[in-house]
Amino acid sequence: MQMMWLLLFAVILPLASDPTVGCAGRNQKKDHLDLRYGKIGEDVHLRCLDLSPEAQVEWRVNGTVIPRDGRDLKINGGHLTVPRAHAAQEGAYSCHRPSTGEMLAQMHLELGYPPERPVAQCWAVGYPESVHCSWRLEQETMLNTSFITTYWMGMGHKEAHMECVQSQLKPNSCTIRDFEMFSISPYVFNVTAVNPLGSASRLHLFIVEQIIKPDPPENVTVSPIHGETKKLQVRWDPPKSWPLPQYFPLKYEIRYKRRGANTFKTLGPYERTSIVLKGIWPKMTHTVQVNAKDFTDYGEASAWSVPVSAKPWWNH
Image 1 (tube, rainbow, N blue to C red):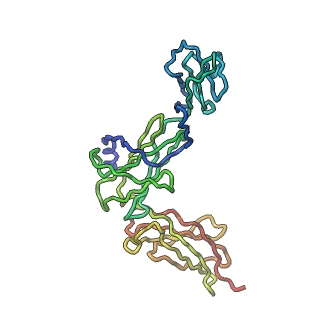
Image 2 (cartoon, rainbow, N blue to C red):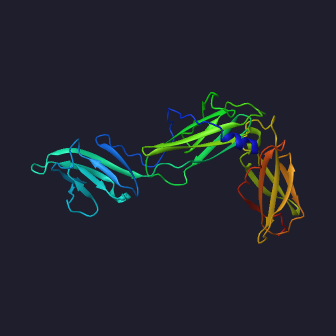
Image 3 (cartoon, rainbow, N blue to C red):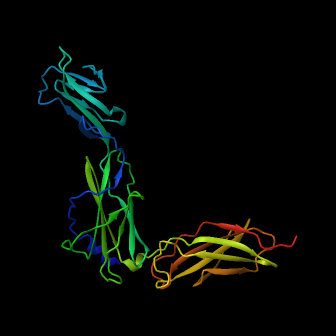
């Protein structure tokens, strides 16, 4: 694994050219205006057509005339400076002839930040059919930000890049379906965040079998058993996202505790999808959860299922 990270620094990242559907931030369209962008906290310069700083120009923001001697905005003829811009200074800026009020140009200023490198992770939740990757930006850009997502096998930069297909339902996620099982060469997932102020990329390496992580078991039920005051019946189903449980089985752990207890007792792993809990406290409510892991012990166990509670049978 250490060798993989050493090789990572030798990778030359090619820039992808086709943005995909992922977006974060505002989605307002101002097609009738000339959009200008600036970074929050830095000076932003606006220019009225090709007029020189000596030109006589009246500037307005959102229809209100900007005083020439104002402190917040600096006018120098055909040039306007927004010092150390902040979000409240967004809006429609226009320049006019002072004598007639004729509009010479109009532009809309949007302020935000260039994207930082996304934080990315990939998990084979649907092994052996799919790998799901997700990402996030630790700082909101405040601007429309799209994401380019690709992947390839091997550490060189000459390998064919394939698209990680982004989800229409789950923002900032994509799915890889074309991969080799038991490959000793790592896959490289690349996500590039792009907005009008810049771009930033993240490479994430993985071996498919090392990132197997099923979703939690579903439909967990806990039921009393008639006549048994110290037993509970627990049943569950494999996660629907695990495509071939008959060929790639899962094993399960069960944890439970009585109400008021600080720690869980854990049992398993088991290859079946039901178990009888024995020796539990009579008349007490018990909370039960189940997790799943690949039968061959590759990867990690799933998160625990949603807690389900029940009491054992009691003859009133």
